[in-house]
Amino acid sequence: MGLDQFAYINAKTVKKEDGTSCFQSDKEVTWRKHARLQEFMEKLWHEKGNEKQFNCVDLKLTKDDLEKLQKQIECNYYDHFCKGGMFWGHQFQEESMLQYLEQDKKFVADALQAVEKGNTVIYSSWW
Image (tube, rainbow, N blue to C red; front, side, top):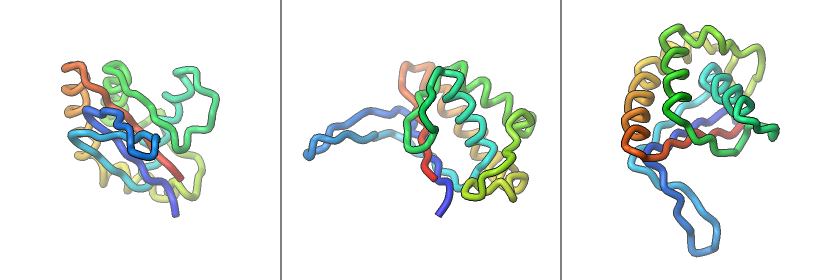
């Protein structure tokens, strides 16, 4: 049990036979209990005017969002320290931040390239 995080690069919504929809993408990136990334995304979610809890929802990322994330990665998510959230892995967020550093950088580079080509990037999580 805990925080699972996903990003879909070049995401497309696909209707399933039962009438529900899901994402298909060229590339999917996953994280597990990356608390500072989640803090960043949750703050971004609320900055975009959403009031609903940031859990099991989709967040479309723009070029501006990705550039902000890139700056946070470069400064070790300085502005996004996780103060709590046992299920988020806050107790080992320093280790997670270092463990995912190269993956975060690659994700942002790939996502920026996709957005610049007019494609969609979605971030989602559940805990």
